[in-house]
Length: 496
Ligand SMILES: Cc1cc2nc3c(=O)[nH]c(=O)nc-3n(C[C@H](O)[C@H](O)[C@H](O)COP(=O)(O)OP(=O)(O)OC[C@H]3O[C@@H](n4cnc5c(N)ncnc54)[C@H](O)[C@@H]3O)c2cc1C
Image 1 (cartoon, protein in one colour):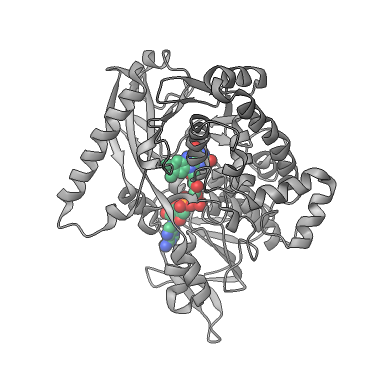
Image 2 (image 1 turned 90 degrees about the horizontal axis):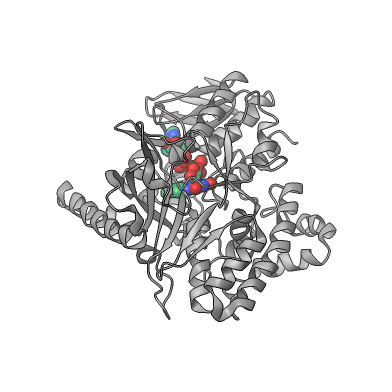
């Protein structure tokens, strides 16, 4: 089989590139090893519930924003989305809480009430954030691959931002911690829990430029998708087919195939078949797996190997819960980010300091009558799940131990849940590995540090001129960041 472009992987990244290319008339074929598309974004279905495997908080769904831009090109309607207001509530260990709302006055009022010890610093921090994030959003709208274009193109793109252009460059060099000198450690932890949940790192780690986008997202508007992110995946798959593209499910790619000159020419499948790509191959696998599996480590340049060795991601431990509909009325929001421990004077510890409670909205309960599907997300270090185990019972015991510990912490953080909630199942980094084959089940992308803000070369490019990557390991910002990255790649491949 010969196609112009072969896409390996049907996660949101691969699906979006394929949908855009197919809509632009490119002959595209997408290979997905699972029987359905979606990858990390797919739902987990059990006992009449359909759980999101993610947190269910999606940004940039307003007119002219990235999803609108993409769907305006596709022959399908975008999935139904609804604004979450507030986007979420942060609950602190002393049970005080702040609603992350679009109403600035109300938000500042709650900052004053919850952080009396550093009112001015806390309000000033957010007031400085707004113009920075707005200038960056405009830059990304003008130049979707803003983070990976050449220095001169970046400088050109910033000209129209005037003074804010300089602020953007400064915020790229600093972590958020540099902006938090005049505030209490309580306020810093309030920022940490959000940054860790939204972009996988604390204020001491993340580049302030990425933090500005993440922290301003709830004020700009965050959305829930009817049917969850799986619905987005299904809609993109439908679009690919309607545009004449091909999707092959249950089709694991084994490795790249090479011609006699050593140039990547397509993909060898597990079945022994080769799918040839006359123009380009797009890998939707993580950077680790693109090189480790598709390219092969023996063909991976040393510099890239070294880079991959230093690249780490978090694992996710999920509790899938069934909640009585009535219990939802006592919650401050469908989404609660709970900081469960202050850990004063220590590095932020996401494994032990936080939980994210995400209930399906009332207009899309995703459960049997009178029930709602809830996903609780905790961070976990992946190594312990993949070290040698004598047998499966050791893993089951670890899973059970985590479940008990998180269950107790959840009830301590959200006592109003009482008996109105029960456990349906759990997911571990092993489950994510089984679902997606991502290295060690590492999910959610990698921490965007000041060192990694500007890619040394365009983020999609690889050591082969016709192999490109679209993955959450090469961009930041969850599904909206991935969608922007996919649009930039589609533009590159079609010279738009
Ligand atoms: C717990 C959690 C919560 C999250 N919450 C949110 C949220 O609230 N909002 C948000 O915007 N984002 C959220 N995210 C992030 C978002 O879901 C992911 O970043 C995104 O879905 C990743 O998509 P991807 O295309 O990069 O990769 P993946 O989803 O990993 O897709 C890769 C695909 O490739 C396939 N594949 C692998 N190997 C092969 C092979 N050899 N041959 C063929 N196919 C193969 C896999 O089966 C998979 O379908 C969350 C992520 C997690 C884990």
